[in-house]
Image 1 (cartoon, helix red, strand yellow):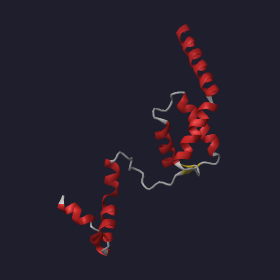
Image 2 (image 1 turned 30 degrees about the horizontal axis):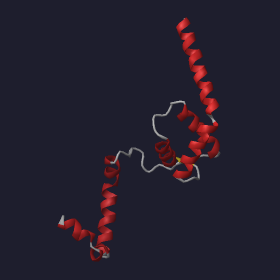
Image 3 (image 1 turned 120 degrees about the vertical axis):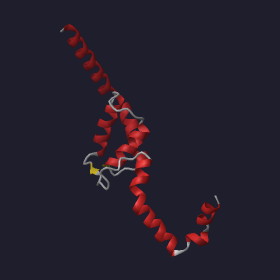
Image 4 (image 1 turned 90 degrees about the horizontal axis):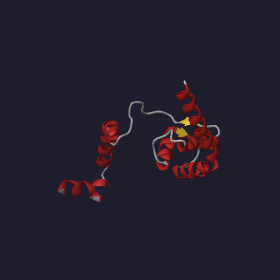
Amino acid sequence: MLFTWFLGEPVIKALKTWNTLGERFLKENRIGILHDCGFDTGRLPVERIRVKSPDLFLAYIAAMARCGMLDCSLEELADYIDLIFETGYEVVTIYNHLKAAQNTFWEIDQAVERSKKKERKQQRSK
């Protein structure tokens, strides 16, 4: 406890050696820390995929989420999208687009449900 207090002191943090130590620590342990926090570190560093039409892309993803194809909340989905894709939007904006698109694309959800029911009926009749 005393050691962590000592390292947190502004006098210690102001030393150039503190910055060097911190940079070296992160360089050596970044992958391990990210892995321990649940991040997939197998492909770091990877450039995010650029999306040409982010509004349309988010509408499709929202429709997939609405249909139950994605097993996560909209908040988590917005984080994943921001991690993987370059949409030009912040995470909050992505979340708001997903939420709005879910309401807009309710018809897609209904069409998919009808298609699933039809497919199940066809499988039962065979």
